[in-house]
Image (cartoon, rainbow, N blue to C red; front, side, top):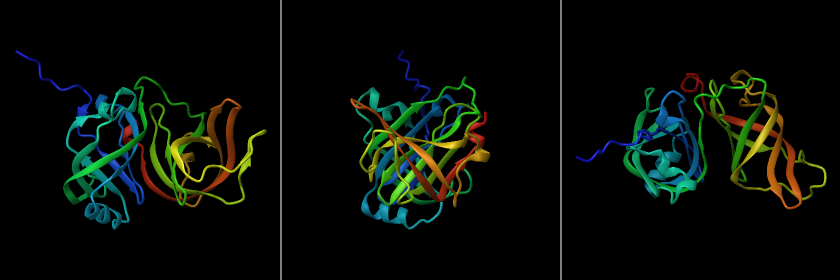
Length: 238
């Protein structure tokens, strides 16, 4: 007999669906379920009619794919899964959401963050608040960097306040207009749900552009929060 058991990472992996052009998925993680101990962000697309139906929804949107192995989205493990079949919901699919497009295909254009979460790690409430900035000019987002339980999952729409950019010493030039890869941004407040950024906030962030042959690169800028797309603590508290 052959063992046809699925791996523990095979499950229904609910996604937050957000953005306009482009559209994004953010995997909805949970520390207490092995299959869902992953933070993942990706750019996706749908056929034209589905894309337009999605864009007409001006509140929370989620996507429920058919069961699959989430490791198929890991760019470091080989070719990324090309598509996900499932249903788009207005609202949270587990909390009263209503389907708006069923049995549709989401094309995975690129996965730009895939991280396994450590269920044994404990959160450091003294650590600085840290997000990941991504998106295109005029449509930037911050996703809270999930580190250890208890933590929170949050996605924001933001903009850089013009005229507030300050470069690190020895660095010149303008910051990128588009953030094709997630750029870590640290804020001078504690990394707790109570101290998180919220709609209407303006705060200075330190953007870490990484290290090149000429040294570390980064800049400071004031970030204005236009809105909070998603916020969750319960699924990351256990």
